[in-house]
Amino acid sequence: MTPRATRVLVLNSGSSSLKYQLLDMADGSRLASGVVERIGEGPVADHTEALEAVAAELAGAGLGLDSPELAAIGHRVVHGGPRFTAPTLVDDAVLAEIERLVPLAPLHNPANLTGIRTALRLRPDLPQVAVFDTAFHTTMPEHAARYAIDTATADAHLIRRYGFHGTSHAYVSRKTAELLGKDPSEVNVIVLHLGNGASASAVEGGRCVETSMGLTPLEGLVMGTRSGDIDPAVTSHLHRVAGMSVAETDELLNKKSGLAGLCGDNDMREIQRRIDEGDERARLAFAVYIHRLKKYIGAYTAVLGRVDAVAFTAGVGENAAPVRAAAVAGLAGLGLSVDPERNTVRTGEPRVISPDGAPVVVAVVPTDEEWEIARGTFATVTATADSAASMDSAPAGAGESAGPID
Ligand code: AMP
Image (cartoon, rainbow, N blue to C red; front, side):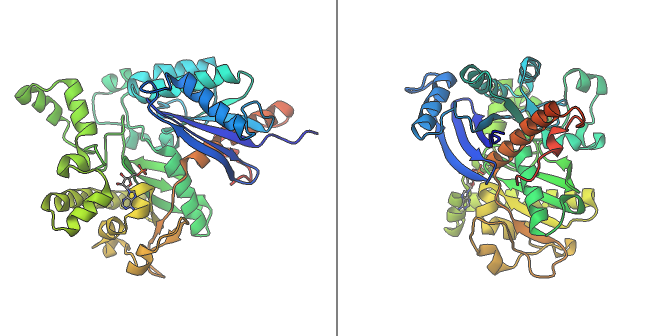
């Protein structure tokens, strides 16, 4: 019997960039990674050229796309709408459905589609799997996913709360359970994914029951350049009083708001430096950011009823000890506190930062979205191969068939 191919190439196609990682699921090793930037603006004309460049680079390292060890290509796809609840093997119907969802993610889904189509052209025989940012959140109960607007209008335009960063929330909630020495089904976790984009989720026994982003990634926490929660009437008000167009308010709320809007900087390192120098605008931006974060911690504590752990992740969550300390300051009543020394330790490993015996474990859990995409991709192709090989095997739910690869 020939040994099974165990490598997965993960592609994350943005509007002008292509990030890639090659992982071996047999031992978890990362064989190659990189990024092609400024696609369409420089020597690389389009995504086809970008992927060809990646393929050439990998081939130069003896890891070409034609390698028999390559099991599949896993593609990050931002919006999976209501139907995609797990990593999905790509075929024409899947491509058409991702295309249908373009109005929900007009910047991201077209780039993701281009990446998939290009990869299909280069390796038409190789399984391609779409892994959706929204999938982990499809377990949210209807009362959390619904906006309280006219049902017919909402349904006609697929307006509901989808949530994003799902691969990160899935990975981090599982790793947090591991850190606690428990099975994910036994623990309730609040995950705070604080990067340039930021979102919170409430994960009950391994299933997402609430998340802070909505129809688009604009809702929820204060982010680097996005406002997060805001009275939706601000948009129409700005239209009336300032003549701002739909495109202008979109740009305002997504690109010129959040920390950047409040103080001119979206990088938490710079904001901390300015606070240390006594800068009032930076201090206020930080205070607004922390206030929103605390509201969500409180709200998700209420949603879950019992919280076993709060996990900080992504660029800010993993690195900014003052953010973590401020986010839980005054929340001892909810069982939350951090040990100042543990909070300032820096390692790349998951770690507990609350004091021993604290009612709620506060943890730093580095995220790894590429690994999660590779894991979902490999589980999907393995399940497909297994069910094709055995008439007896039940059709495998892709998301549940991960096997001992993590
Ligand atoms: P991400 O989107 O997860 O890559 O996070 C990027 C953000 O993380 C940056 O914009 C910074 O605000 C933040 N960040 C990265 N490193 C640090 C650090 N050492 N201290 C504070 N914030 C950081």
